[in-house]
Structures are given as structure tokens and as C-alpha cells.
Amino acid sequence: MKACLICGSPIEAFQSFGSMPLANGFLTAEDFDREYFFDLRVGFCSKCSMVQLLEQPPREKMFHDQYPFFSSTSRLQAIHFERFAEDAGRYLPPDDPFVVEIGSNDGILLRHFAKAGRRHLGVEPSAGVAAAARERGVRTMPAFFEKDTARRIVEENGRADAVLAANVLCHIPYFHSVAEGIDLLLSHRGVFLFEDPYLGDIIEKTSYDQIYDEHVFFFSLHSVQHAFGLHGMEVIDLWPQKTHGGSMRYGIARRGVHPVSDAVRAWFNKEKELGLDNPETYARFRERCEESRRRLKELLTAIRREGRRVVGYAATSKSTTVTNYCGLTPDLIEGISDTTPVKQGKYSPGAHIPVFPYEKFSSPYPDYALLFGWNHKDEIMAKEESFAKAGGKWIVYVPRVEVLA
Ligand code: SAH
Ligand code: TMP
Ligand code: ZN
Image (tube, rainbow, N blue to C red):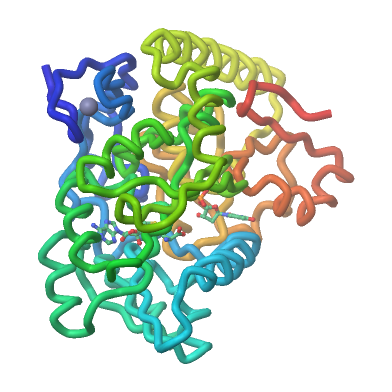
């Protein structure tokens, strides 16, 4: 029996995905026999409502100088973060504000503060992406954010008016150290704005591919309110986002310092209707995942039996869960097209499907493209009109397995 990472209550798995490699562990053939695997199991804490992984690989195995995810590879993400910078700006005092970002990656968000000449600091442990940020003029500290990191930042820079984080809080299992760090770091009226994939969307869309090593928490308003409540903080507002297939941005502040928006009460009720606080919801989710797996495997097997070619589109972190959980091997998917140079020429984690440069996608087009980058669907569909014109078909699996007409 495991203990909940937030409240310490006993917690059991509602679903096991079996043995899984690192979602971003793209590798060469020489490394196949040294590949790292762990048990991907997910549980729901009925005491504090947090959905979480029961095991997570050590952080240095996931976030290091070769970490291959560069935030700025997506054009729409760049636009999204420009807006995030504007939204955060509304919480800043007029006089020389200081902004800290946790998990600042290649500087996709902080560059807007750098450009405006505002005091900022990114905290980013993966040296490769951090170097890309520095090249854009984004001040970056090479570290994992935790309580001690916060202490050092305050000593050297003073307190922050806003702490920002996108797609990183859910990566960090030592939540309490991070929350204490945020408490140390924020000025009295300071706010913490963070966003992550939203549990409600994952449940509604059966997007089980959000479940992988890096995502240790699947947040909801219920669980976020409880977790920050343990540190004298509260949710003051929340804003749904389209990114990563459905995310939620939460505004957190010291209890009683800022007014609480009406949206908070409304979302509490919505989550109750969705059953996010109810264990049965997760048992049903598991059944839908199993059904989705069966259908996808059947569809691909039938297509291959007809001798048609299938390639994967975008070697996303999420695709690692899909290929391994569904047993999709190179006999079903001959390769995965991806625009990220460090992934190209390597093999996908666990399933060992070759990753090839995007330029090869069209020469010649495959019969089917399995859309692993479904969260970037609008951007990709706009870019790939000629694939459809050439008779190519898209296969999607979220929210259900189907061939798009
Ligand atoms: N914020 C970006 C990047 C998300 S990927 C975006 O939304 O696109 C997660 C990033 O967080 C990675 O760059 C990873 O190196 C970093 N990270 C992981 N653990 C961290 C920690 N404890 N503190 C700070 N950054 C961390
Ligand atoms: P993500 O889903 O975790 O954001 O991963 C994005 C991956 O998808 C990254 O490896 C780049 C790849 N990608 C493409 O190959 N083509 C595209 O058009 C887009 C938007 C992403
Ligand atoms: Zn708990």
C-alpha cells in the first residue's frame, strides 16, 4: 500500500498500465538492452481527491541536459504563452515587479518579460533547454525548484510579485517542498499562477495518454484547493485552457488576501457533477481505456492486413503511453514523423518505432497517419491539407478511436 503524496492517506491503484519506459526516453539501438522501465500505476485519494502516480522514476532520469521537449516547437503554444504573459501582467504592481517561472524550458513565456525589460528569473534543471532560453536573453537558474531554491532566489533577488508555472507543477512529487518554496518566495500580495492538464478533460475525453512518468499529479480544483489549503493558501480564480488537450490555470494566493472569483464555486459544482471526487468515476475511466486500446489495436491490425502503410504523426510524450499500453510495434506503425531534431534518427521509448524527420512524411505520404499530436490538431490539420488531398487519412484515438472522414 502506498501513501498519498499530499495527505499521507493509504492509496491504491485504480489502473495499472504495466511496465513503461520514460515518455521522453528516445534512444538508439545500442541502448535497447539498457532501457529503463518502471510500473505505471495511477491512484485516487478519496481523502484529498488527488489523482496521482504511485511510482515515479528519479527526477534526474527525466530532466537532464538531453531533455528533448522544447516548448517553442509549436507555433500555437508560442501564441498561448504570449497571452499568459499578458494575463500575468495584470497581477503585477506597477513599480519594478519581479517574476519567477518554474520549469521555464526554452524561455517561451519569460521571453516576453525579458523583452519588456522586466526583472525575471527562470528555474530550469534541464541544461539543453535552459541554454536555448539564455540565448533568447532569458535569465535562467539551473536548478530543480524546491524550498531551498526559493530561499536562494529570495536571498539574491528579494521576493517575487508573481510565480508562474506551466506544465511543471504536475511533474513534481515533492509538492510540499514546492508549496513552502512558493510561500517563501511570494510577496504578501503575490500570486502563483500555474496551469497543467486538467483532470476533468482527461476523464471526459478518455485521454489516458496524459498518464506517463513525468505527470505525477492530475489536478482538479478539488485537489488543488486541498493541497494549497495545507499551506495557508487558496484558489482565487481559475481559467480553462485549450492547451495539451484541455488544461486549467489556477490563481493561488495567501488565504484572505485577494477576493475569490465566483468561478471557483461554479467549478466546484461542475467537478461534483463530473464525479471527480468519486472513486467510481475512475473505475469507469479504466474500462473506457481498455476499450479504446482494444479498438485501436484492432483498427491498425486490419489496416496492415490490407497492406496499407501507417505512420505516427508527432513523437509526443503521450505517444509513449499509447504505443506501450496498446502494444503498437513497428509492424503496425512503420515510423513516427517529428520536427524535433534530437528525436529524429532515434527510436521511440519501449515500442522502438523509428522516429524520422518531418521532411520524410510526404515522400511518399503514408495511407494513414495516426495523430499522436492530437492536442495540436488545429495547427497540424491546417499544415497538412495536401496529405488529405493526396488521399491520406487521419486516425485519432481521443476522444474515441476513429478514422476521420
Ligand atoms: N513550461 C514549459 C515546459 C514544460 S516541460 C511549457 O509549458 O511548455 C517541464 C519543464 O519543467 C522541463 O523543462 C523540465 O526540465 C522542468 N522541470 C522539471 N522538474 C522541475 C523542477 N522541480 N523545477 C523546475 N523545473 C522543473
Ligand atoms: P507535446 O504534445 O508533448 O507538446 O509534444 C510535441 C511534439 O510534437 C514535439 O516532439 C514536436 C512534435 N510536433 C510535430 O512533429 N509536428 C507538429 O506540427 C507539432 C505541432 C508538433
Ligand atoms: Zn490524499
